[in-house]
Length: 422
Image (cartoon, rainbow, N blue to C red):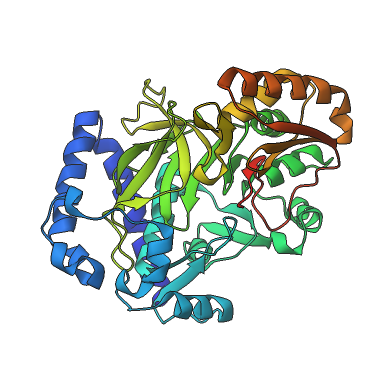
């Protein structure tokens, strides 16, 4: 009975996603749909959690902006189970989620883990949306899906309940190389992994030939995309997903489209004053853990041009990095802020031979650029390009260069540009 129920809910979410894709043809359609759904959500469902009980019926702008620290401090006020962050941590560690629910956690890249709780119905809906947007023809033949991530989740278990997908999870905590061999032996049709892992798989001599490749959990750099697509002969499609939810899926043309039929996005400017935006998200489909005006830590470059796929949903040109990794350097009139995308492009454009790097701000006025031994000849060009950038922006900084091996981290997110916390 449970299996039949789960299959029904997955199918219902899939069909609803396909229906919305067909119905919402213009920006006006998307805006009208989103306005109606948001009004209904704020009029009632938000009152199911203590944090928003007194705000039900108010317009969105009356709700306070929320962030990770606030959510984790008062986690029990934002979910219908009244589960605290300590209880969520314990349930996640022991893999003992309440019946009918799943508790998961972030990778802890920013220093502290974030937790989430979703119902089984929300898990099935999540899968239906991914299938509807990412693999709309999945029902025609049974697909083998390999997911390589540093932490498993019951979210992924939902795929095996669809009966049209055979999903296998490969835990990166057991080592990237070891799991690469297992994936190659299984020969999946669909590959879902962070860019660092996709690149490693593309660099290995094997008969691996996935029909679909999805990148997630990290920033997909152009230098990685080029290598991966050249090896597998397919477009790498990004999935923008975090502890806080599923936000965007790339179309077959490789452009990332926001899930505006499920989430309302507000935008804040980045501290460097450039073209990047940081989203506030309000998910009007989730009921177990309510997310209203939640400030994400990501920097996105939006794309206003039309997409060949015809989708009216806002496109994201690139996920440029994290707010935490915006370099803050001393200047003549205060701090100079430089976003990860500017730094990344400066290094890559400095020399065509650069295939990998790390740039780390280790103190208020010190930055270290590290290149692997095979790129040693490019170190001078990379250093000169960075120094020219810093001089042009008026940043007073000590720039050091290193040549060291750069193996991909097994269980942490790869961050090529990073600002260490003081």
